[in-house]
Length: 173
Image (tube, rainbow, N blue to C red; front, side, top):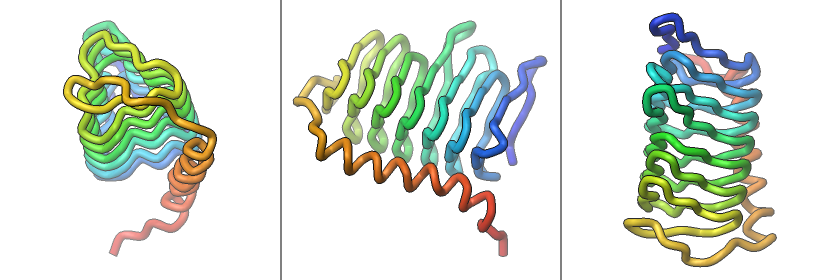
């Protein structure tokens, strides 16, 4: 597993979380309870700080980084889809960051907000609670409803359960 201290900055990973042996976790990174960190994820707290809340998932080939002396924060029950880049800013509880999307510095993604696949949230943008944004640059397309939330609670639970199942059952051949 690629877990590294850097210049006295050491990752803190809850024992209930799963971090793929093919992921890199560097420096001042905190990963909460029951998180899933997929293969190819690069989470770098080399000169900034990364905080990931409980039950969040950072899927395959994602990059999380922060500017010097700044913090990238990921709330509880957040989904960060395959290949997304989060550089700075704040992703609040239950948010969904679509595959291949980019969230730039000083942006705020509100609770239950959705950044669609391939969207680019530019520096300093605020995506309000329960808002769906799409495009380059990302623009509001509407809001989510209770049916959407219900479906996504199920999807998020699958990744939360993977953290335990992978720790117990993943076997190299």
